[in-house]
Image 1: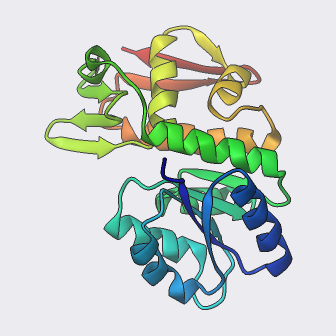
Image 2: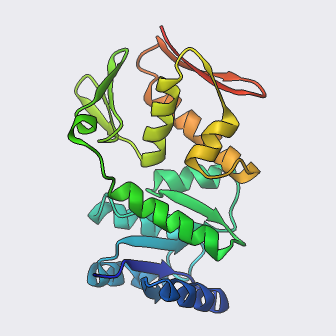
Image 3: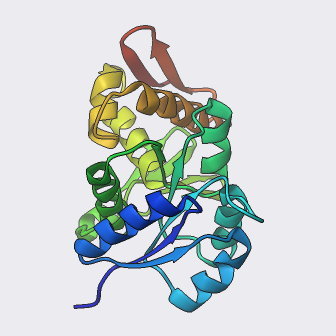
Length: 230
């Protein structure tokens, strides 16, 4: 069986050594790169199954690298390892194509769980019935398996978490869904960092649905959200 290939871009030598050796001990094949300007050549040669990127790198930052990766590969998972925690940085990262964020310092067990989750998301085992299960949301058509949101002739490709968040809101429509439940299901914990990330996702979904005023994601302060289909 072929090993899962990880392209790991990190310029902190000591941290990189620990991460690389730990992942290799779990039977991953890891290619480590330090120089941001060399990443795309390495990416094309190595053809990784998943990319783990630091943001602050020599010569080219992780945001730019993620954008370049997305130009040649739309589906390979990208995880950012970063000390950046501002909402604007989260938004920028997701806009550049990131699937997940892990804040430094982090535990190796958390990183491995996030890697496994990202790979599972990329290759879901879903029945044929689920594949063709379109959901009508006002003037939109949503398909959680294909991770698509279609409005008129425009199709928006959602990330896994965007798709799962919209599915959870739909399945609990007209009821209040607790923030903690969303965080524990989609992020594995209701930490402050993950909570801020959820805020970013809710804002993004509201933007995606803005063409139909009958659809509304209502914030119930201190509790959670209610999805209303008018």
